[in-house]
Every structure is written in structure tokens, then in C-alpha cells.
Length: 556
Image 1 (cartoon, rainbow, N blue to C red):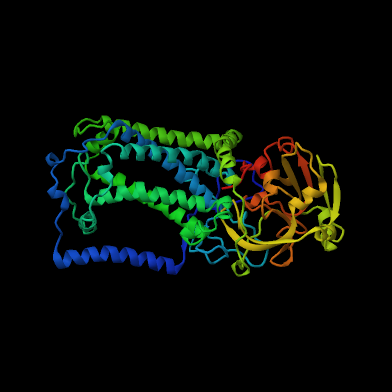
Image 2 (image 1 turned 45 degrees about the horizontal axis):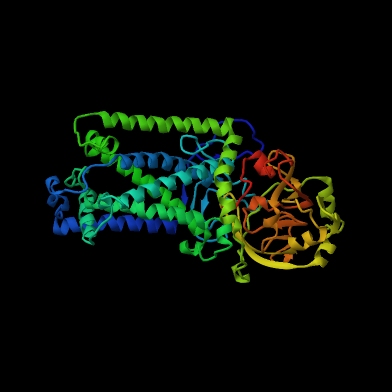
């Protein structure tokens, strides 16, 4: 299912290696195993010692239930809309995960510290191994877009879908609260917990409990499960996703600590997704096992008819529409990726520019927080110019700064160092999912702005690299002038209190702390101030934006 990525690949190719590899730390495996064994074991112990507990559903005959009865049209509609968007969110989320198929509980993301990995590849220690090389493909049956190795497309689908998934959830919750339907999901007594356990004991010991008519009420375990899915899983998914945003993390450093740290949030985000998948499998299985025809009539057409197959036909139709859209989404991903990128920018780019992009980073981390490992990424420069500069320790390096400025300049490293030095310890957020904390020392960009005096209509700053993009051509990226003037924005020549290494961007790399890592250009050759990004490259704001459909604004 996951397969190695060939950076030179530009055409559709079905990967040869489709192995699904699951690597889990023994400690994590033991903990998961013990939890499962303990839960099921206690249920069996109760059964052997005390016998099967009373089924609480037996005391709630349908004729004694007066409110709420049935499923209103808005609840049925919301249920199926939620199903559609949840499938989209899960499939695109899996593709995002595949770009860095390792999960951690620490911010260092050092090889061999992951608690779970979906790649058989072990990071070699005899050569430079980039995070990009570590990415994997996903079969399109499982992941969206499938085959195409670009997290940009996967993120586009994910972030187009998430707002509508959340909107549907908000509307559903409001209607739930302002009608009596909330009584179906919200427990009003702690008695439901022992009742839910008693129902679980029935299932765990292979005794089917009395199945209440869901048109009138759920059993205790169903109610607890549905409550958890709606009021626990969904908020945790939202909060853990927000905790991975560089704009939010660099402004509210306490926020990722809700999950331990930034990588903890990523792991929790995955576990929520896994919980949704497990719930869907169990939920669909129980719907089929306890009366498919009647149950489908409940949730599709709002009737309690045990013989009509209308609900089944409608449900099949919805499933076929969801599958057909999956094929359409795969086609769009390959044939109309630019339209997808532009749609996502219109939805989320606008939303982010009005909200989290306005947050100003706060320097927070201390020397003790610096992580021992920091992934390398990007294609090392191979140009004779850079190689010649590197051989001479960049003593002959000159940074060219021009464009729409009143005072274009060329500055050596020594001249840059004489202007100012700002040292910050910050967290790096890679679009692939890994992170690292490092000290960066360099020139505050506002000092450079003061020197070159940009024209009044300048809105964009372009940073050009000696390196190349994934598909060839000069690597570059753009930032708004506003982001370049935010706290922590520097041209760094120092990393962890030592000269910047070549793999990490020597002689000069960019740090804009409210953005994802691909926006922080390494091996900077020149800087240009412009009134728009639309006339550079293909006009989308950067090499990854041009070729891999990444976001222009990378706050999340």
C-alpha cells in the first residue's frame, strides 16, 4: 500500500511495491495489548463469576418512550453528509500521513524514536537522507489522491473538505440542542456508564443483548458511543489539527501541550482518525446484523417500516455517489490539480489570511529545548557557482537584493553580520508532518527592509535559492512583506550557535516562523521586492506552489 517515492517521476505509474508495513514500538504494542486484554478479560471474568448481567434495554419497551420518536429529515441529511465528508477527510488525511509515515510523541522526530511507522525503510546513517525521500505512495483505493506523490494535492482535498465537515457538525449540533433530539445522544444520568458496561459484557462474551428499536431509543452502549463520536472525537480532531499549525503554535505555545507537544497532537489526530474508522466498521456491521432493512429506513427516509426496501435503496445510492465522487476526485487530482489548488486557496487561503496569519509569533523555547535531531530536506545545490562558494567557505558570497527598492545592494556575509544579530530558538514545522527545535541566528529582515527602502506598492518578497525544485528549475518562494516584518523573521547564517551547515542551507536561509518549512528558502542567492507574486515562475508564489500545488499561505 505504501511505496517508495521516485523524485524523478513525472508521469502516472503504478508502484511496484504495495506492501503495507506496520512497525510499532514493542512498548506501545504491549500497552495496547494489555488495555485490550484487560478490558475484555474483565468482561469475561464478570461473566464467569457472576453470570451474564441484566440487559438494561429490557426495561425500556418502545411503548413507554414518548420523546423523541423517529429521525427528522435534517438529522438523516446531516448523517449522510457527515459520512460523505468524513470519508473524504480520512482518505486525504491518510495521504498526508504517507508523506512522513512515522508518528512520534517527541518534537525531535529522530529516526527510531517513532512509536508507529508505515514504512519498512530504516533511515540510513551513511549518507544524507532527506525527509522527502522518506515519503510513500498510497493506493488510490485507500488514499486521496492516490499514487501522486504530492502532499499539496492531499492537503487541498483535506482543507477543502474540513470546513464543510465542521459546518455540517455545527448545524447538526445546533438543531440537536434546539429540538428534543439531544435526548438520543446526551446521557442525563451516570447510570448509563454501568448500563453501557453491562451491554458491552454481552457483546464481549458473544451474547447478543436485546436490541432496542432505534426509532425510539438506543441501548446504553450505543448512546455512549454516539455521544463520544459527536462530542469528543470531533472536537479533539479539530483541536489536534489546530495544534499542528505553525501560526498557532508559535503564538500560543501552550496549545500543543494539550496533547503533550506538537507531535503528540499529530499522533492524537491519527488516533482520532483510527477511532472513526473503527466506529464506522462496527456501526455498519451492527446496522446490518440487527435488521438492515428497518435500520436503513430509520436513517434514510425516517420511517419505522421493517419490510420496505426504500431505505436500503437510498443508502446504496448514497454509497454509489460517494464511490463515484472518489473516482472523480482522483481524476481531478491528476487532470485538474491547478483548479483544485485555486479552490483550496479561495476557501482556506482567504480564511487564514483573515485569522491566524495575523498572529504574531512569540519567542518561547530555551536552549534546553533544542532537539538532538533535525531532518534534512530539499535538493542540495549543484551549480558551479554555489560549489565554488562552498569550497571557499562562502567568503566570496554576495547577497543581491533588488527589485522595487530605492537602494539595491549586494552584501557579503561579513557585511550582513555587521548589521545585526538576532538569535531565536523556534520550532520548525514541515509540511510533511515532522518537526524540530533549533536556534537560528541572523539578520532581522526588518533591518534589511530599512536599508533597501522598498517602494510604497511593494507587497511581496521573493527569495531565490541556489538549489533546484523537485522537478528542476531554480527553487524560490515568496512571502508577504507583512510576514517578513513579523517577530522572528530573519536571514539565518547560524544554527544551534554554529555556522549554518550546507545541508541545512548555508550560507543563508530564511526563517519566517508563522509559516511551514517549505516557505523557508535555503541556500539563498538573492532577494527581490515586488508588488505581486503573480509574475514570478508560474505565478503561484513558489516553486513548490508551481509544481506540487502547495499553499501560497502556509499557516497551517
